[in-house]
Image (cartoon, rainbow, N blue to C red; front, side):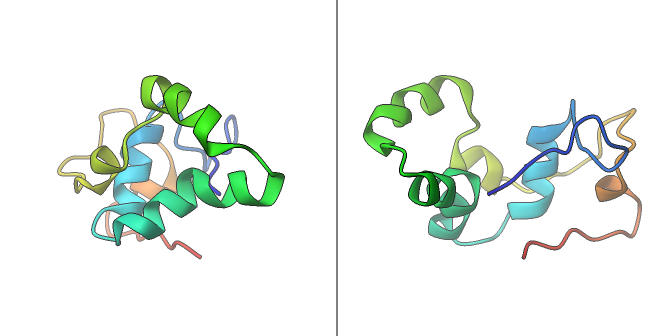
Length: 90
């Protein structure tokens, strides 16, 4: 499960898609899919078949998240985007 922690300083909003790319690029597709929705669906008993069409419209695709982040957005203040910093996925 993933959260942007908005409005905390460490939150990545409004650059959450970029934060996801920074955190998850290069990881196996199955792990990314689990972390950005699959685990929550399993834990809370959501029906993925009902949610998939909504996620396809509103959520980032796993393919988008898998694309490495080339440049930190101007104005991104989260420590996740700090130069030389690292993001850990637990």
